[in-house]
Length: 463
Image (cartoon, rainbow, N blue to C red; front, side, top):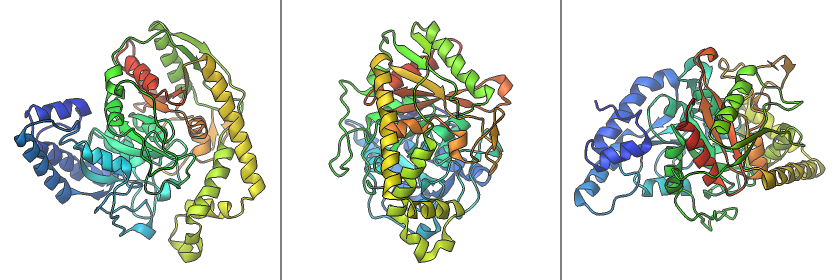
């Protein structure tokens, strides 16, 4: 069996194009890893063996024909089971959709297929992506490859686990409140939520429309840049789609010299406690960036905690989208899903408008910040991955909500403001083998700067 799955996305594609390995060998190796590891990790809800093998044979025929080749030809990837895949079961993590087979792909999936990628499976997700852990009523919880007794986070926990376990070099995530960056931090992968709707969302563009995005989870910033090169771009089917202004491909800009950037960092908020290991990771990256020549300062922002705001807006959106399920058969819903829908049912117009005003104040504060700074660093989570289904009630000696608003306090700012945010994993011996992550926030549309800076850190001394 060819060992291809721990290689970078770019290296694997180059090996296929140079015919050092075949698409069939790459796909078989990935499927073998699913067979070996999924009974322990539960990272996949659906495996697409027959479809993947057929696509691999088609890729080999394309190679044999010669001529221009797509940028991800023959590369096995995984799709989060919150994204529709034509002809392949898509459950959204819910028993209501246990046998649902869409007749069309999302734009995101459509573009990855067009780039030559081969889907080997659909990754685990909590019901309708509503939790910071990957648990649902369809099967066992998704475990963390770093320690299977611990959570992989959520809601893109299956995708982050698939990358961390070396099953595929690229998996997709969706994100309304940190769903890409939380599991990336817990599992030790690189994840980026792009600027809002830089990758268009369709169908289901109206699912949490002002918050919801899709993006890649990979092993590095370079691999994420390659994934974004083939998926970012306007599409009128999504009324929220944006047009990112960029003169070159994300990958082309990675190795260019960076100017001296203004970088601010923060490790806590009076109402958002963070454990020492997560604070130390931010200090480490800030010091490394200073050694690389950037101007780095500790900062504070006049902003309130985001949890209540995004909870109010999100519950209202969720009830508008899926509240009918409470009356259809509420017993088939996960307990947390019912809680979200019930809360959304009782949110008043005044409460929703008030949350919108508070959100705008946060957005204005970030816009003011980015007039003087290029990047903001913050902890990707307030703690390391915790044992399955036991989110902490206390962090750094302070009581916190026992859910994602407690253990991931900063991620949601990117959803509220629309800007890009990436998680860079940080490892240290004293962390007991568990990674933590550092968030890189950028101004809206400056996804290129976020990727370039993360890439420079990955290749920098002391990382």
